Length: 435
Image 1 (cartoon, rainbow, N blue to C red):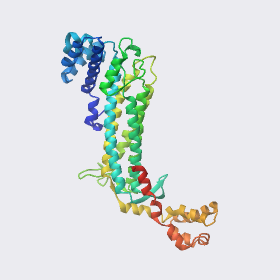
Image 2 (cartoon, rainbow, N blue to C red; image 1 turned 30 degrees about the vertical axis):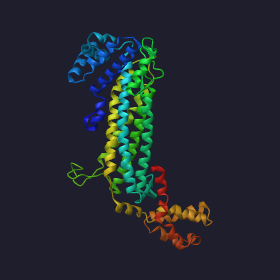
Image 3 (tube, helix red, strand yellow; image 1 turned 60 degrees about the horizontal axis):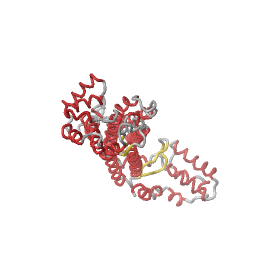
Image 4 (cartoon, one colour; image 1 turned 60 degrees about the vertical axis):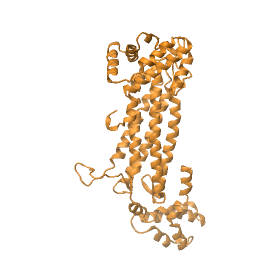
């Protein structure tokens, strides 16, 4: 992943230092379990810890890379370098294991580490959404369907909607974190012919994983497909929030605006510009995260007990999807946290259509007064269309319409045009969302 959209903690998970350290832990814990079974000497397992537990610095990584350049096998290169530190006891390392035992179990650890960072990201985003929801709970604003003025909502409901969606995202991520956190130490073709299942159980416990019920030499890739698909759904939620903000920042609307810092510039050509660059960026990043879900699904159908067609895919999508989503969630949190709301523009937009936003209330009042729904709709619409044409105010036309006046008196019509009517259940909705 390019540095522009990377954050250090998530990036570190996918660095060689962390990967080789996890590989080492898998091998060392497996040796402990093998020693407990009497398969290898206890002194050999002890030597693995005493002589092999060294930081994977640039020198060690360079040595592994050099060996791999010759042998063309990453796990063998890793084991060769490790043996140079352990000495003669290295012959007991990797007993009965296959490369996939190391690679798949490592990937499970890395994905759970990544999920933990993403869960923390979501917690920060949820906190920002909740704070802004309560701050703007009573700011009545225009609700839109098809991009057209519909009926009033509140700005707080928008933030509360974001909160509810990302709360669901957190629950989904917790579920797939558990699903992907499985360990496979089952040997060639997954039969445990050369290694006891208790070794797998021991390694799983030490690494905070569960055992894979049946690994065919690889962990079934439906687990990974679900994981990356969930990241794609979360990214889509990021895009939904970003798109809402972008629309509300348009010059003709300008109800909200991304924070514009001192010294910031919006355009190389037009000095007046204040563009929604952060949310536009988020929409682009979301497209990338979603794009990683499809190859993860295509990885599910491997040949027989294993092939490595999935390997090159996962070397790319593992880092890129998690790093990109981590960055996107942090960026959206910053946008929400500092988003500027313009109450005057909100009120101006509410009044823009001369009261047409109360058309449904008038329609319902006419039906309650005994007019058929079809006739009520026709009466309300003919007056509304005059407002669309710029001829005047909706309430004035209704009061002057004999079909309306014969059923609804002027005082009742005035009462219908009450903004508070549309917000009377906001507290109920908030109680549901933030319970």
